[in-house]
Length: 243
Image (tube, rainbow, N blue to C red; front, side, top):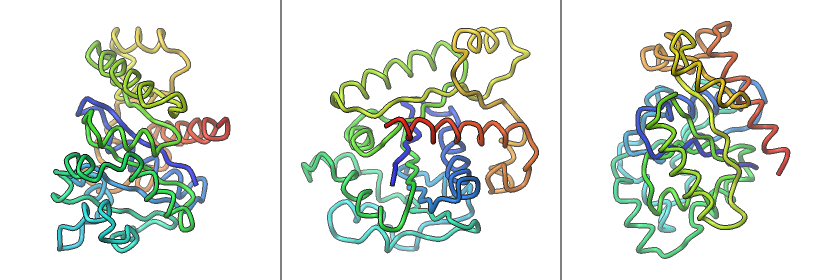
């Protein structure tokens, strides 16, 4: 089992869209049994897959040994893809981690799910606190979506510093240029500066994910955006194979 975290300290970069589409690629292209674990209380991943949390707000209880995570896992409309949706209860998750004092709680919970899943994709909240520290200890690779802008570059530097500070055995980071429009000079310059980074284009098909409430590959299989996510997933699998 391997864990992939989609993370950024900056909101609005396409983090949740990346999480859903990469989890779909894992399940449908690689045919791996995949869990999408939403750690953002907005439950954006669940929304995009048409899956809400159960009526009781109990998503935080799995971290205090009160509830088996598998009890909250829900199936989706796609083979090999399940989701552990978020709810409002995890807004206080950072404080809960502090109270527990268990630095690898998320890593241990993930390891316990290994008997049922080949891949876990974390949709992380845009924060830099104990939640992000727990994710860095649990993840095997960290995906950082970066729209071409100076603010995104600064945010990436913050992520790199935080990941490297998590320990000498920190997970590798895979930066990805997102929302790229090659008609724009700034975007072309960003691509030329980082020619080896994967690219996900600015595309109406990706915007339609929130309308269709489906991964882009499920309703636009031939779209350039679908190919971009598939290529990114291949790069992730290569990165995991190098570990």
